Amino acid sequence: MIELERVTHAYPDGTAGVCEVGFGLAAGERVVLLGSNGCGKSTLLKLMAGLLLPSSGQVRFRGDPVTAARLRKRDWCRRFRGEVGLVFQHPETMLFNPTVLEEIAYGPSRLGMEDPTRQAREWAERVGLAQYLEKPPYRLSGGEKQRLCLACVLACEPTVLLLDEPTASLDPRATGWLVDFLLDRKELTTLVSTQNLSLAAELGERALILGEDGRLMFDGGLRDALADTELLWRANLAHRHEHRHADGTEHRHVHVHRNWE
Ligand SMILES: Nc1ncnc2c1ncn2[C@@H]1O[C@H](COP(=O)(O)OP(=O)(O)OP(=O)(O)O)[C@@H](O)[C@H]1O
Ligand SMILES: [Mg+2]
Image (cartoon, rainbow, N blue to C red; front, side, top):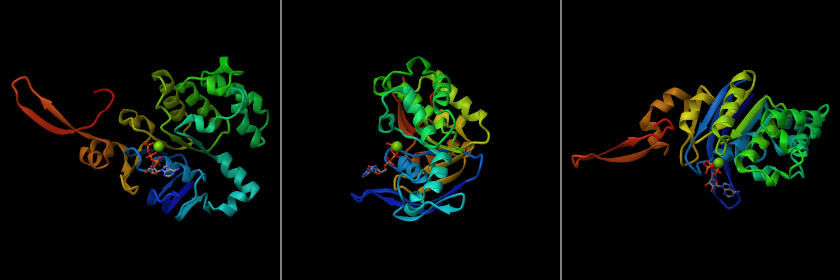
């Protein structure tokens, strides 16, 4: 569905976003993106959604290179935007309509889908926002905004779903709903970034880990990655923990924080 070939992105101020990243997502694959703060997860997802363009290298969607020229072609761009949905890490950056209903209906309406308003009502119901249809999005709580962003993207019925730390402010019930939803949609291709290592195992079978230099340092089985404390340590996803015992002895070891611990 999507392929990246030696994709590098540097921001205008010279900050390196990602460096020479290459991998492909096959249809129906469920992949989890891991990496420490600032390593380039959000940059990578924006490159895949065509919101940023590589400084060098290439992103291909169904074989077509995603270029500025292609994004200007109305039909191609509409198909690409309809098929590839990105839910931003910070909900505020994607909400701008006066009401929740209009916010969800916006995407389906732009894509020329039938009855965007009905579509919006259904998705508001699914994400638990049916009672807020007339409310301005900026007056929602953080978790409600995150659910609204999910509804906005899901209402467009993408085939590739890119989620940037989607559960960061969701409560356990909403998190469970999202995990179940993603499990039920076997046909969806998903790439989900998360800092939550305990949840990661529920979100996919394959892991991509970005190192602090913005390079891909692991592409393989998620369970193997989660079991490899040394790898997680190198990726800055584990930390050294100091224990002091009652008898006065101390020891240090690498520790991975999972929610159940
Ligand atoms: N608009 C921008 N202009 C300049 N530098 C940026 C911009 N956005 C991000 N960066 C830089 O690019 C690098 C990667 O940022 P990115 O947001 O992709 O990281 P991340 O892995 O998503 O981090 P986090 O876990 O904190 O969400 C960082 O060094 C960041 O400071
Ligand atoms: Mg990020």
